[in-house]
Image (cartoon, rainbow, N blue to C red):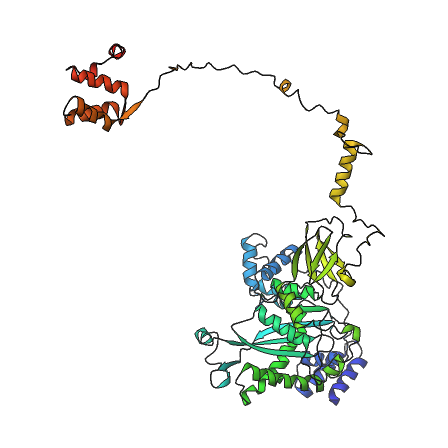
Length: 560
């Protein structure tokens, strides 16, 4: 407006003390306040002639830097991850007073708030994002960015195709309604950082999984085989979030086998995947927004529509950075920059068994995928050791041998006519020896120590000078006191024979007569289950003589 230009020119030409009058004049003309007019003039390039305060930046309160930092720290450390700072300045001041950091009445809440604002220590400053840096990639397929998201707007309704979730029924206050949907639609998005080319695929599942991640990455990197959508190839770097499916060991091992690096990420740093977030928004707005106009009845049909949209979007939409369609920019890729995804059978092996174990054979070789590999050049290798083998799909048939936490590239041995190895020695013409192993070197040193430079037949180790036998007893210096033994009396020529108690009772019946039950019990209590034949004769003799058989002593036995 002309009056603004006139006012600014008047202010610039005004002498000291005249600016206030000019502002007052225009305030009456426009109805605006003086402060509003000064802001308009400042935006138009007017700079007031007021000198800067010499004490600007100095603390003009009775609080020191520690006290201010204490207040700001309380607000920062009690902040929420999403909402940010939630503690009011008044609350922080109360805590500082209660803990003796600030004296009561030392400063008012409003003055404290003003000081925090001046020094960027207030809520808005603490909630501000950390400054970021721009990142660039070197060429198409140099860096891919991968992200997964659950489509909260749509689900496949049985018999009715793709259905839109009614926000009045499906919201955080009605979680039970989400439980009714057994399978969710998962949107997987991959972006080529250099060209901005998008690849999208949908899955119907309970949630993310490593199986879905594997299928999606293979689909994206193998390409669709379409002339209008040539995007394909394995990147050098892959940026992705730290989701459980993405960091599964099998997925990480697969990426390592494909020689894809995953740069370390700062925790909770979504801006690193900024291109993926933008891509998710593009897919949602440019493709999914029209799904309510025509129902898809299966995931397969949804993916066909999505692929059709991708061809059009990547080929015709101009990217804001490089000012070209995405497909056109991607086609600038050079031959050496395009790494094709290995065949499906090799991909299955890389996923299921990224590293396998082999035992070193007697000639320091191993077998792998029908080829033989010589490992004699690897330091410390010897027969019967176990090594780990990692497939290198872009170097096959060359493989990587992992031994002692080091990786060695090994080429297969060439097989000649007749099935002989090229490195085999020709009989009668040459002799080849394996390099000495560490064990062989130890054995050689030991043998040289025992026999000298030359080992003669029948020679004893160390020239037979070692004294090994005949002095062992001399090492015993303390002789223990022998314990007394108990002589054992043996009646030579006498063999004690016994009969069972049943046979003894039978003899009594035959020679003496009926045996009373009481006598039977007494005899069993006295002699147990058997009795010496000699003693049995003594007892029967006493019974026949009418004597008490208990009274039979040693003299009676001798007489008998």
